[in-house]
Amino acid sequence: MEILLGVGLIAVLVYIILYVIGMLQTLFRSRKMVLGYEPSVVPRAESVVSAPDSVASETVEQNLDSITERMLNQKLAEVDADVAARKEEAKVEVSAWIEHEKERLQKQLEDEYGEKTEQLRNKLTKEAENIRTRMESDISGPKAREDELRGVIADLEEEILKLRNTRLAELDSETSEKRLAATAEIESWSADEKERLRTLFTKEYEGEVAKLRQELDARMNTELDKIRKLFAEVSAEEKELAKEDIKRFITKKLSPSDKE
Image (cartoon, rainbow, N blue to C red; front, side, top):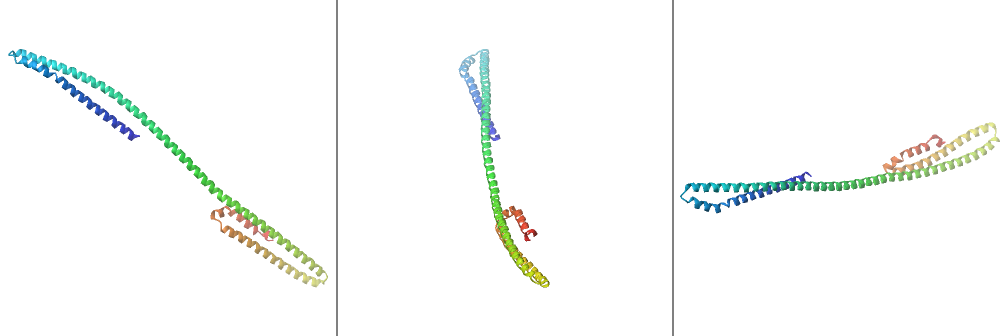
């Protein structure tokens, strides 16, 4: 905006300089016009001056100087009036031109400001939309993966629970049948033999139970290793999302109540 105003002021100064030069040229031409009356008057003055009467000659010269000065003053007054009038016209024209330029520049700046503002608003709106889309994508991706992992973990928990219940049921059935058969056989023996057999049976029973528990723990550890391997293959971000679920799952499966 400052550059445009500077250009406008320079143009105004150039216009004023040209106008003053024109006025000076007009003034010089006017002076020449006034001095141009002398050739028509001087011959008459010379004819009078050439007369032997010096008084008449001096009177004619004085009259000629008076007429010339009066005409020159009159012409200069007209020129000054014309210059003053033109100055006023120039002032009015320059003022109008400056006002017009100010209005034009103001409108141009307002239009440019409005256009730039609209472009900036559109750019910011588009950028905000892109950021929102990227954020939604970044959130929805890990969330979907987390839901998928939760489903896998739930299926594994259900499968392990079924396997554990089935194995415990089989163990209870086997030990119950063996207990009944051994008890019936023991009842027919002597007390000492019964005591010996009861002790032996208890050891064998406890060993069998311990063995079955070891097998069950090994099976559970195998399933847990599969889960660990599955989670080792996922990204660090997805590991972080499922970290608490994995801790709860491992704590639950390794608790004493589950081992019994």
